[in-house]
Every structure is written in C-alpha cells, then in structure tokens.
Image (cartoon, rainbow, N blue to C red; front, side):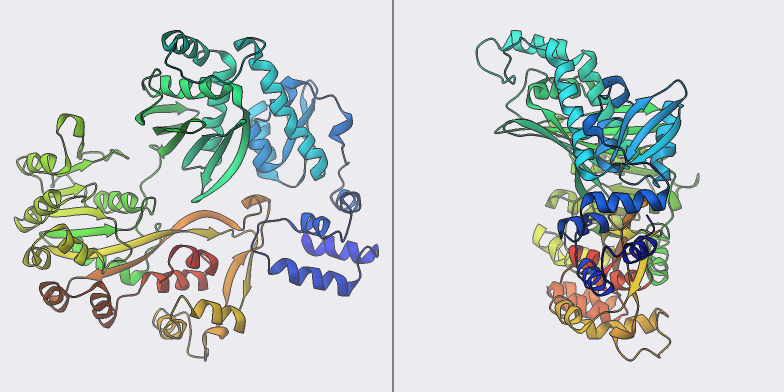
Amino acid sequence: MDKPQFNLSLKQKKLLSEDKLAALQKEYQQLKSPQTWDNFLIDKKALTEKQILDVESELLGVPIIDLTVLQIPIDVLNLVPEPIAHRHQVISFAKSKDSLSLAMTDPEDIQTKEFIQKKTGLKINASLIGRTSLDFGLSKYHSSLEKEIKHLFSPNAKPIVSSPEGESALDDGLKKMAEEIPVIRVVDTLLEYAVFEKASDIHIEPQESSVAVRYRIDGVLHDVMTLPKVIQAAIVARIKVLSNLKIDEHRLPQDGRFKIDKDGYKFSLRVSTIPIFDGEKVVIRLLDESAKAMSLEDLGFEQSSLDTISRNIKKPHGMLLVTGPTGSGKSTTLYTVLSMLNTKSVNISTIEDPVEYRILGANQMQVNPKIGLTFDVGLRALLRQDPNIIMIGEIRDKETAEEAVHAAMTGHIVFSTLHTNSAAAALPRLLDIGVEPYLIASTINAVLAQRLVRSVCKDCQISFTLDDATLQSLDKDFHMEKLLPVFIKEGLSTGKAKNIQDIKFYKGEGCDKCSHTGYRGRIGIHEILEVTTEVADMIMMHKSAQEIQEQGEKQGMTLMWEDGFIKAAKGITTIDEIVRVSKE
C-alpha cells in the first residue's frame, strides 16, 4: 500500500484531520517496532479495522473477504504452508480448476503471489483481509494438524515422554511415527520454507502445552508456527532419523547432520539436540552448499581494509586471525580469502569443526575428539603433508595456538579464528592462552575483527539526520566527535558538513518486500589491526588491548563501530544495527 496515497485518502474522507494525522505520523516514526502503519492506527484507536479496510480496498481495487464466515477445505488451506501464511500474512481459502483465491493483508505483495503461483501452478486471485480474519485463518492450521495426527495416538493420548519403564516399546512407537505422512509433511514443510525465507537456523522449542518453531532470519529470531504438544516427540524422532542420531537417547545432547538436495538448492544441515525441562529442544543450522563464492567487497569490506588484507595474505608466511562472536561470519570471510588464494600451484589444507563449505581442490579435515583427532593433533599431521596454506577452524587452547604459530614461523601461511570482541584484544588473548610473546610478535601479520549487521531494505529506504537527543544518546556509547574526520577520510563529507548532524543516515520504513522489518540481508562491519614493528614491541611488553588499539588508530585503523557508521551513512545499514552489535 502506497502510504502517502493512503494518508491522502484518509484526509479526503475526513477520517482523520491533518493535525491528528501529523501527530500520529511523528509518533509512529519514533517507534522501534516493525509494526505496520495501518495496525498502528488501529492500536491507537484512531481508526477501526473496517474503516482502514474500506479505504485500502478502494485504493487497491480488490474485494474484502471475511474468513470467519467461510468453510475452508483443509486441502485448500494447506496449499499455502503455515510458515508462509504466518510470515507473509496470506491464507488460501478457495480453489477452482485453474485458479486459487488468496486472502492477504497486503494484496500488492507480488513476490509471495508469484511464489505461490509457481508452487501450485494456479492463477492467483487476491482479496484483502484484516487482522481478525487473518488470525482466524491461521488458527485453522493448528486444528487441522491436530485432526490429521490423531490417528497416530490413542484417543486419550498425552504428550509422549520418556520413562524408565517400557522405553523399548516407546522408542519403537517413535520410529513408526517418524515415518508417518503427517510427521514427514510437517518436518519437510519446516525445512522447505526455512530455505525459502533464507533462514540460517530453525529452533524447535518444546513448551508446557505446545511446541514453538522459530526461524533465525538475518540474525534475528522470528516466530513462524506453533505445533500441538502431542506431536513433539514424533517431530524430534523424525529429525533424529534424518540425521542418524539415537532415537532412544533423550537425556544427553546429540549432534548430527544430513543434506537436502531439491529444486536446484543443496543444503547441508547441522542438527543439535539438548534435553530441557519440557522435552528435547532441536536447533538446525542451514548451510547453503550451492551458494556462489563471494568476494571481500560483497562481504562489506571498505577499500582501506581490502588493501590491508591483500597486502598481508600475499606475504610468504605468517598468520591472519579473524575474531568475533559465534555467527559473526568469520568462517565465510576465511573461505572467501582461501578462494582468492586457491590456485593449482599451492596446497591448501584445513582442519575444521565442522567442515561448513567445500573448497574445490582443498584438503579439508574434520576434527573428531571421540577418537583423539583434535585441532592440535590434526594440525601436526597436516604439517607433514607439505601444505602452503593452512586454515585452522578455531584456536581453543594452548596446544593448538602453539602449533599454529610454529607453523606460521616455519614458512606457512596460516588462517584461524579466535573469540574476542575486538582485533586488539586477540593479541593479549593469545598471551593469556600461554603463547610466548616473541612467537606472537613474529608470526601474526594482522588481526581482523567483525560483526554482521542487517542491511537496509532498498525498497523502503528513507534518509534522516540526527537530532540532539539521539546524538546525546549515541555519545554515551561511541565517541561521536571522532566520526566527522573519519567521514572526510572516506570521502563521505566534502568538508561542507560542520558537525555530524549535517550527515544523512538511512533506515527502512518497512514494506512487503522486507516483511515490514525495514531490513533485507546482512553484511559485515570490520576493523583490521596490522601488526607493525610498534605493535610487535607492545606485545613483547605485555601491553593491554586498549593500548594496542590506540596504536592501531595512530596507524590509521578504522574501528569497527566507525566502519558501521560509514555504512550507515552510505545507506547500507542503520544506526540501530550498529548500536545493537558494536557498543564500546
């Protein structure tokens, strides 16, 4: 829905006065939630749902449908699976020989309509619905699924729980249920639409009376569906069957993996189960094996960082460390660097836990602590294989760290990851692990720290400048006075800007393309510390991370939060995202 046109229609129909509308718009813009404009008006009791639907129906030229007075056939309802119905607010309610009727809160959502048309092979006829009607339609999924799975259980069945008595019979029953059509359909639907939504993880979380399913999309968890408690054990059993885990083990965590290869996409899925109070929680990590190799530019590196990385990976030996929390894109960065160096004239060997992506021509080893194949044991073996370039998935202990620095010292290029909050903190961290200062100073070429931030949706992007209150709030977490010289250095200010409030920043208003979040996709923000002679001397003197960082800044290092604000000024991400991931 075109917001200016919608607001103009509200004024023309005298549903809201100009002053009232302006006041509501100002309040809406200050909201941090992804709530839509029409839902905001309803919640504020400025307009009724019927008034808004009448205006939207007239503007869009589509009829309004009330699902509460319709009988929706189950097979028609299931033509749009529940995750899509929830996230894109669409219900399939009627079907003819060659067409499908959809009730949508946003009939202009072309992407969803095209996806459903391709999936069903039917022509799409869209109608408009309100929140009440949508909630009624979504509730039909829950009731239909419960009816469909009733035959799996006795009439008075309760949620299955493991017990010391009769575990064998219970597990046999779980195996049988894991192969039943309703259970297979539910799990297949969860996987298929996690792929469609570009989710990185699926969380299946048992609760007291239901099972919540959430997808992590662009680093943020979203509720997608609620399953009846009675199907919980069968769902977990089905996933265990797929990932070759022990169905009869309910008291210990388990890890497994499996693959899906369908409709042109190929994914490797890592499965983790843990016992919690209400059952077994399952998390599935999705890794796209068919994804094309990205360049460092695609990952969000600015030119100054690119120059530093290029200079250091071309050195004949030494180590490049990538640091950051879990899920910050460290592995993706290392794989990208390895793909840049991957030629027939070099031998690339890796030791990882687990092997996330396959690199053509590289020798990739996966650790297996159960049989004694740890990072340090595997690394010692790799060094006897005449490698030129070595990647170690993670430095976790003194033994691995020492093997890594010795490899870098003896003529190898070594890449690895470490868990620290900044680039400078990685060097004292290695000292804490127990590596000798002279080894760190002589082998580390550079340290790269990074985070992932959500990208602004280009379809609903708007610009704004910082007001006094926002600037004061940001100044509590960041040294905002340092930003203007950084912007001038990066060419974002021609010198006309006298302070940071003269710089434009960007955010997404929310639209159907981004599911009204204002974001679509993710990109990295980075800082890279080059180990110069001065930094090496500071390592030898056991200087703190703060002192090393200050030296890095003197050398021209752009800090991670500064890189984030550069991207916010370029319209790539938002200030809110920078605050979320990189507070000082």
